[in-house]
Amino acid sequence: MTEYLLLFRNASAENSYLTTSQDMAEDMPKWQSWIGNIAMQGKLISTAPIHYQASIVNNEGISTGQPYKESNSVLVAGFLICKTDTLEEVQEWSKTCPILKYPNSSVEIRPLIPFPTNS
Image (cartoon, rainbow, N blue to C red; front, side):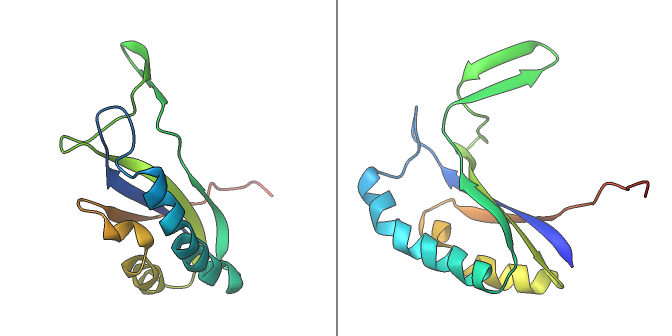
């Protein structure tokens, strides 16, 4: 089976996520159901939302506070790692991801490359 990283992207406000606490409360059962479906198939490896605050390290040093945002204020808000035999299955799951209810949101799917082991 191949492992896949799903990156959940969503638009953000000036200094926080765009979603309100009410949005999050309403969305939680949808997320639990969506993730639970993957878990019940034995294909969930890990998942978590990501705090808004960030440290960015580059050749010029370290900046803290604001996460990296794309030009349209879209940023990574969470991730999921799963395993399956086909990319198409992950794409089908992603079509029903709760993040897609928000404008400018998306699910980016990236296959993971295992590090070689010297056994």
